[in-house]
Image 1: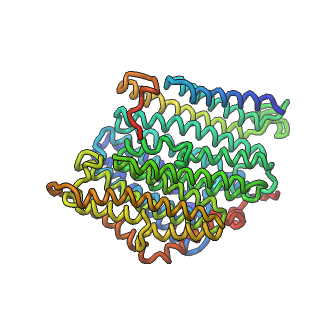
Image 2: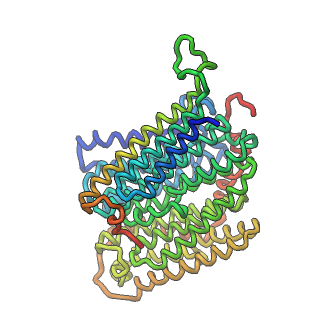
Image 3: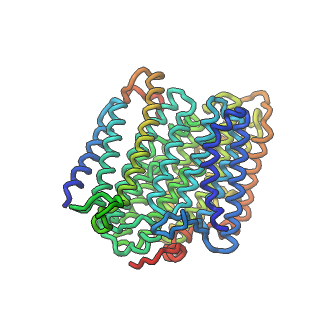
Length: 494
Length: 113
């Protein structure tokens, strides 16, 4: 049965390369085809989620039937099962949004790249091999470069160029990191690396981990390498922006967490955690400060998104199981909220022709459902009780206190304060300024937005079951001994 | 210490220098390619064992007489990915030149803030 899980990779891949054939038959069928494929993907992901959480055992797919570390394996434990579902669901909603939002030809290329982006992120989360992770990261990155440049304006090409150059540097760093770890341990399988981690040369482990973190930091939007992110978020097609924020960055953050923790037995490992916590803190501070002075709302949300992933990185770097679980919870909440907010902003841009702050005046009267969705998202991100992000911020604060990082508490509260400043300014502009005639809102998009709003409020009121899931997912990353035990390594001993 | 390591790290640094210092977009992309070449050379030299032959199954070549094949497989993949990245970047640059009429990165600055 478990071999069916490989459909998660196979389905988007085959569908993506089926699109040129479909284009010959009917051009109009491409976008509905995209929606159907993402829906089927969501179904498979939901089946895997159900399977993993009811049996409590991870699903392991071995390519060609070779046991790891000889063969490459996919590992779908608690974390991967959860986030593959998030990816598939977000892709499905954004595919539905794309039918309305994407009017630039060639749409067949858009649909192909869309599916490859989803495939890459799914693969990054599911894979159990460090070089396979690199390949999936590059699939994600190259489709993301192309999607950023998709509108073919000068600005979108400029954003894509920045992204390509930084991404290229990042992937070279990542490969050097792989070379160091492979040179020291002679294996690429993550579980095998975890098993041998205590034998690794401490210098190779430290430099290798630092290089791997820097390589992934491009996609994970951590501070020195995130200059591409606001530009790409601003210029990419609206559904793609939502996908970047909802899961591309999450996949890279997961990869950072996984790679760090499998090497936790290495000597001098805690200095790498300190590196990550510094990067995360700088990301939060610079992201929030930059968001404060934006007049372009999409760009403001982009900076806010960067600041939130900085908080996730800080949580991953706390080095406790609660910190990792809180990070996972924050990733999950942030994925929902930012999918909602970028969808709403993109819809405003389509209807009113721009995302400048002035376009949002009187939005409460012109597009009430969209304005309501943005308001709920903004309130939630600030961390007001009864909305979902409140609970993940609380868990992050508790984890930081337990790990004796008191200043992280100040960081989270300060970030929330700055978020409140710029989001309340936006809410005020939407509801209390300007007039305008009512625009008829698209019922499908209104339904998607209300669905996501309902989800935010449900998690806000009943966080317990979700927190239980997140704790399992967090311990899946943190508990390396269990991870090694789950992967059937072929007759190797350290 | 293996001299190949020094050569590959020198290549990586030359590439990084070109990306950071050069103002012409095409020269930056050349720098990126040089950096990728350096990384590939580093990966190959990690698996190199002095005096052994290529890991191709043929007469007289037993596993103990060949170098480590895994880095070579990795490099093949990395080369393909590097080609795709370069092609992608060049197509972006073509569009950029049509819109901005320049390749100087200091003049390609409409997005800021």
